[in-house]
Length: 142
Length: 142
Image (tube, rainbow over all chains, first blue to last red; front, side, top):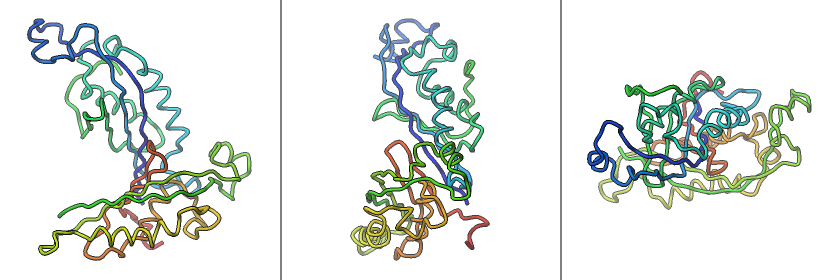
């Protein structure tokens, strides 16, 4: 028996899309208003999906209290109300939501009690990103 | 092949309790969900069926018929009930979101004409849901 359990977490953070070795003109051309000098923010939604058997004793794929506590420690405490550009993770990569989705996958695949099936990150109600398999982009310490 | 999804809502009470465990263990594992007076949710059910488009009607399945089937098989049974105390589906399993998804699959499988049940998604809250694709595995005979 394989069942999927999905949980959504919300946090708010700021970021600025900028590449140091691009000229100002090229940064502006590439990133548009996302390159404005002082950054801007989003209400992010992170949706993680785990799969597995239903434990016959608990009726659960994963205990929500364990997952919420893991998310609090490794996702929310780390990213909520931060400026993503200031974090170690984004010192060498642009804090796009694509790169953030890769980081989220690396974080939640460490959750010890269930198998991480997929990661979906919403930057706004209109923009969302799914981690779909191996990501080749190098990303900093997570 | 086309996938077609219909939503339905029901409100019900439940609690999490394993009779084989002590009161202390139930409270430790299930937290506030173990309150024996129960608590409730507004559940949202999303039922996805797969099928071919009828060349005359343009339908995979008549949505009105699908709505009636969901009402008869699930909503009319679960709505404004206590899942643990009144619904036989949960006589031997805890009515977690995961187990509700499996129970709804069992109620609907084979009941929808001209379409195959593809996925049952049950939202306990907007930020928590379980998906079941009929992957019973070795437990198929149960």
